[in-house]
Image (tube, rainbow, N blue to C red; front, side):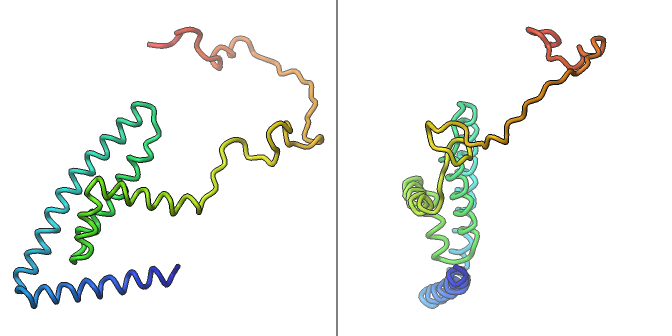
Length: 170
């Protein structure tokens, strides 16, 4: 894993430098600098716009009582696209622009979901070792049998009771 990260942080910048050098020799230095600045500016505007739209879809999902999983993933991918677009380089700009296209973002989301699906185990329900139909998995010595009396001060007990049918609501 550490080697992949090392390669990503060394190999990608080297490829970016090579591509920028080739573009500069094919055109000119001002053209290359202008291209990098324009793609960064346009990309940041697009990422901001799509980020705002993703934020609105997130709030809409919350308002509808839905889990905003897709909206969160879109927001993260758009933020990653913005970071790629602000990084000078041709490969990162292409990758950033591709992530801003909803169709390709959907494909990337599906790919990441399939990769992460096999890495995590999801258990829904109580955290116990019992199987369905076996009942409570506790031991017999977990049972507490107690009797007791708790004296109540009736004059101050009304402060601790919840309001009844709208009492105290304004």
